[in-house]
Image (tube, rainbow, N blue to C red; front, side):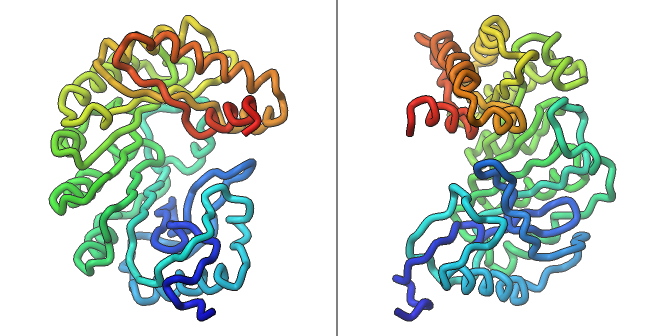
Length: 326
C-alpha cells in the first residue's frame, strides 16, 4: 500500500505528527514521561535562541520522522512509549500540540525538582515563534497547548504569549503554575473558557508546603486559587494537584487538610500523583504501590458528599493499574 495514502496505518503519536516541545535551548520532539524513562528528547532544532523558524524546513524534519515511522521503525527516544498509537495519520503540515518548557525561572524551589541547574540561564522569547505559527495559519484547532517549566508566569513574555492565544480564541491552553503570583491574563482566559490551570500544592498545611516548596507562600497560593476559581466560567478549569512524597506528605492528616483547602477555595477538581523518581524506584514494590493507592482512596473518601472530584494522575493511575493487574 502507498504509505502516503491517508488510510495507511502506522505507529506514531500526535506530537511526532503535529507538535513540538520548546525546551531550554532547543526545540525538541516532546517531554513526555513513559514507563521508566523520559522520552521525547529527540532534538528537532538545536541551539535554539528564539530565532525565526523556517516552517518549510521544520516540516521537512517532521516528514522524515513520519517516513521513519511508516517503515515500521520507532524513534529511539520513543521506544516503549505508552502514547504511541497505530492508526491512519494524515500527511498534512500543521501544528496542534505544543509544550513550552523553558525551565529558566522559578519563584519556588521544590525538593523534587531536577531542573534547578537550568535556572537563571539566558531566556529566549517565545512570542515571535507563536505569532509566526498563527500568522502563517499553521496552528490548527483543536489544540493541546501546555505552558510549563519552572514558573511560566514570571518569564518575560508569558503575558504576551497568553494574550495572543486569548485574542485568537485558541483553546485549550493549559498553564502549569504554582499560583504564587496572580496573573490577570490567566484570569481573563478562565473567564472566557480558553485557559485551564493545574497547581501542584502537594500539601494542605503551611508547614508541609514550606518543607516541600522551600518558600513560605502557602497562604498566598490558596488565596490566589480561590480567586482563580471564582473567575472560571466552567468548574473544571481550575485544578490542584497533590504529588505524594513519602516522609513529607504521605499522611492521612495532610491529605485531609488538602481536601479541606480545596473545598474552602471552591475548587471542584483535584488529582493525586506520585513523585516520579520514587515511583520508578519502587515500580516492582507491591507494598509501596498499595500504600499509594490507599492514600488516594482515603482522599476520595474524604471528598465524598462534597462537590470535589478526586482523580488519579499519571503515575498514580499506573499504580492503580498495577494493583488491579490492568
